[in-house]
Every structure is written in structure tokens, then in C-alpha cells.
Image 1 (cartoon, one colour):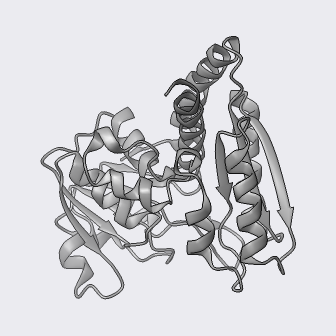
Image 2 (cartoon, helix red, strand yellow):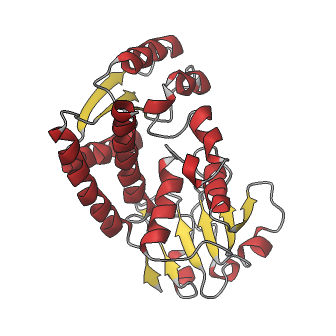
Length: 284
């Protein structure tokens, strides 16, 4: 088994982006990411911290707006409108999840698609269906999966790929991006009957459910590539993915670790999207 080392690959991506930021700054363009955080959820605060560190590494400017958990949908939308109009802002990110009283679809819809560096607006998601050329601001985790496969020169075209999970943030867009690269894709979810019958066929198995130990060794084909996108905290406080890592690792050819796999890749791709957005807003 070879580890698909997200920390290593993300460092390389951030290093190359550092050069792009320096080149843009010579043209008086200063890429800037703005983040809206509601409440102080421990996981959200941790994710925000990782994103801020990546901005520091690349030279991307960072601005954060914090709100209490009783914030309304209307207040968040007004702030987003201000950021849409601010020419110094190139990326807008609303950290999810949001409190129950906030209507998330309206908040996401309010973001200017050219500044939607999370790739969550209907406009950016819809464009992805056309081809790889239109994956302009793709959701960061699916983009991270593609980037790590490319880095390790793992072919996608012609492969049998199974994606477990069909969220709008990971599963669905990842399935589309893999289809765009000519894989044969099966998307499984909570209503799939006999999950193992699908996962055992996979040359590349991507799991994004949030259920520790969901995928056992018996559910994995010998020599498969396994991308574990899940992140879960055990009762002991340990971070684990959705697969039985030790057992699956004995059968798979490649596996992503948790932590240190798709988390760093997601953050690196957010930086990539921010720079893409800065270029587009200034040069097109």
C-alpha cells in the first residue's frame, strides 16, 4: 500500500501558488479571501484556522467576519452583498454549518459566482456538467480528489469508480468531475441496496459519508485506490475516516490517511480557487 499524502501534495500546491501571488502583486493585484464565521463551533474554528494558515503561506490576504449564533439570514445576505461589491475582495466563503434559523440556500445564492471560491453556487455547479473546461470554480474537496490522483499519476479514464455519498458539496460534484474525465461512475448513498456489491467493483473508491468504519476490507477490491474523504472524531478524541484504515490498507494499492489526506488538499484547492477568481476578476 502507498499512502496518498495530502500534506505533501498540498505543500507543493501552496508553494506554486505562492509564486502566482507574487506575480500578481507585481501587477498591483492582491488576492484576498473573506470568510464569514457564525458561532464558535470547534470544528469550524479549526477549519478556519487551517485556511488562514494557508493564506499566510501563499500570501493571500485574509479577512474574517464573526457573527453570533442568533444571526439572521438577512444580516448575512447584506454582508455578502457588501463583499460582492468590494473590488478588493476576490473570494467569499461562508463557513458551514450555519444555525438552524439561517436558510443556507439563500445565503449561498447571494454570493457572486465569480467570488464563489467554495464552488457551491448553482451557477458554478451547473457549469461543471458541461466539461472539464467549465470546472472554473469547482468545489474544493472534489477538486482535491482530482488533484491528488493527478499528482500520483493514477489514471481516471476508463476506470470503474464508485463514490459513496451524494451530498451537494462532495459526492455529486465529485461524480460529475470523474465522469468528465471519462470514468464509469456509480454513486451510492444511504438508500443503496447491498453497498458492498458496488464497492467491490471499484478500481477507485471514494467515500464521503461521515461514518467511521463504514468500509471494511471485504468491501474493497484487491489493488484498488481508496480515497477516504470522511472525517469523524471517536469517543477518545481521535480523528478517523470512513474506512477501516488498517484492514483496507492491506488490500488497497493506494489509500489516503485521515488526518493528512483530503483535509489539506481541500484547503490547498480553496487557495487555488481564490487565485483563479482574482485573475478572472482582474483580467476578464
